[in-house]
Length: 360
Length: 200
Image 1: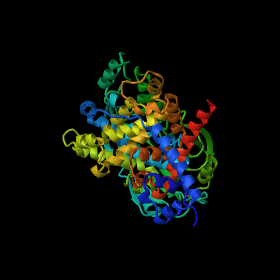
Image 2: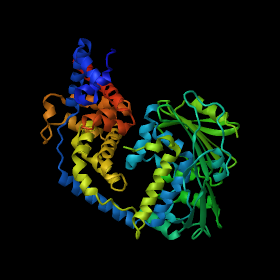
Image 3: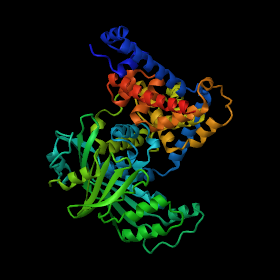
Image 4: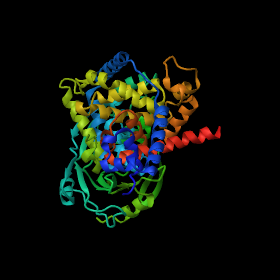
């Protein structure tokens, strides 16, 4: 019989019951395998020693520390105004549904293609260490007013492209030629439009400025109490899974985020906010990118994780994002107020080819 | 363990679903305040799983202090999840491995590690010091940070006592390929150690 693999030998070292009887018997009588087993054993033991640090933690002390942190965290959550939480948590979602691919790309920037799975998994299991979700958040203006959710996105799966079109009113682009290794029908996800209404408060803005040790510049006339409606979606995503079960290709499309105002133009409010002392730089960057007319996408790209470049897709300027190791790439563009994104475990040329070959 | 399950096939919605679930929990969880409740079994799970979670993170970081920080971070995260208690130990171990590897890669713990590695022996008795030099330990961490993420996680989880089946479920591998993945990681680390040993 053929020799068992090194992986089987490895399992034989510390979980022999998991190895098939035939393999075990073979190894017992095979000098080559016995020699291999010795090498595997030796490496396992050496690594075990190298990794082991003999840590014996004090569970009681650690529990006191966690209890304290949880209590502080709870107080902080309790003192944060609820609308602000909704602002942050809900507004993310519709945009995420659309450009989540880009966020994943950013998150997976340092990871190899095979690490896509881990990227998702990490998102699931360790949200505190993942900040890239913030990449697709609309600006968090809670320090400068109040926000209320008007419409929820309700992201859900639908059976096919026709159902997705019916649910979103968007044309679902068809991929002409799937990149190698991918095939079959995609899974379709849709989300409704989400809308949040933001009311500017000069008093709050003054508090935010005071907290930064500054005095609030006088707001433009009519801004105090001015209301702004920020919307995004509906959106749809088609997802092809590769042979290994990892997502191979995502084509997503959604109505781009827009902002409307009841009086003072959104741009006036934005420019005023940008002039405020103590405005966090990341928020400022988001605001600058948010033109509010559905022609640009607030998508700050974390330098260092991905590289971004410019291309065009059927005449529309597009942003190409590539992970630093080149294993994952995506392209995002906006036409007529609709954002489309293509991303996958592909290189930049491949995602561009898919993007340019999309059939409406 | 169905950590990812159906979500694997839907990356664009992984985030939004996760968020949606989180939102729902947060809003429904606290009827008065509108914020998420801390899970009731937190202390029970914590006391049972803390040593293992620290052990996982310590294997990655090589420093108990850094590992305890990671464990705190992981449990704080866990406090607001609805992960079934039965899946909690594996969930926490995987989270600890990823979080610690993130720290290792981002170098956030570099100062701590180097201090631990270069400074005088800590007050905590450390049996491994007898056979592994501090320099070696530092090299192991550097090599660990360079491994493909899947290999690094599989290696650390296996050496932290998770069964092949548990590691397989956590990484969405077949139990048969866990041995191969772990073996590759060990070969790479061993090579790293030998290379330096022979050059000195």
